[in-house]
Length: 366
Image (cartoon, rainbow, N blue to C red; front, top):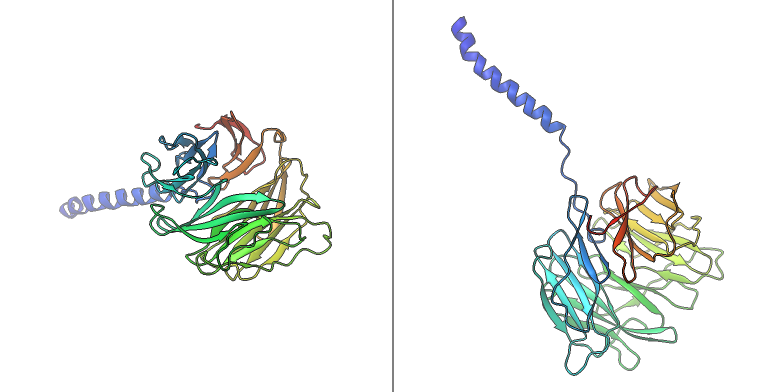
């Protein structure tokens, strides 16, 4: 009997150790998901900052920006793959109007490609994977109209093809209309994309493509009732692989915010919220969750959170300052968010750890 106990004892010890490890593993939280492409980076003071995955931000600005060019925008798919755009509105000779930078190692190294254009007043950008992306290049404005070019890459930004041009003296077939100001571009897959903007028609301004940007059609989005003095500013929607998507529209005529939803990948849009008591104290900022099922929005006075189809409204204490030009809000997890002031000399950001109820000033590389 004593011999059997000696044989069983090591086995029991191993089983107990295994049970202990199993129990401890169950109490260890899985690593937090890295934020998506609209929440993992920002620009401030001409520099690019990337989330470090540990509650802070790193300066990953490309070091070889040509003289006369200014960094305009940046986008990262994840902690490694990203792009940045710089432009020179007044090129001379054969100089490129703007430059595309691309990195595959989180900004440690950047490659660049100059893109020739007659003129460039800035660009908006979206990528759906490491290879396929689009630029909306702003060519010039006049009397409520704006020319733009849509460019596409299929090799990660090394080369670009102009697929559509809207200009005052030359247009490609099926291009976006010249009327109205354009303010952004988004794509859900290789074919379907949108450009937002505004005009004086009193209608919602949204253009859609279903062939990768070659041709565009103005999309019919029903306006909210009882808004005769509306002036809509439409921002490009976010549409997800499950077919769900959200479209945000600001009506500056009546100071109302409108949210539309789609469950058919953006073919149709239905209004689901138009009565939020926005103060108008500062530019309204919003963020969608990675699956599009929840929304966060702030006007500097309140934090509006949409969960389960209902809005929760929390007062911000103290109020956010309205004179520092906050232009972007990101959330790196459910509770942790950041507000990014713009303008020359801005070198700090605001952080919340309670979902947006309170904000604290921190260094932008903290």
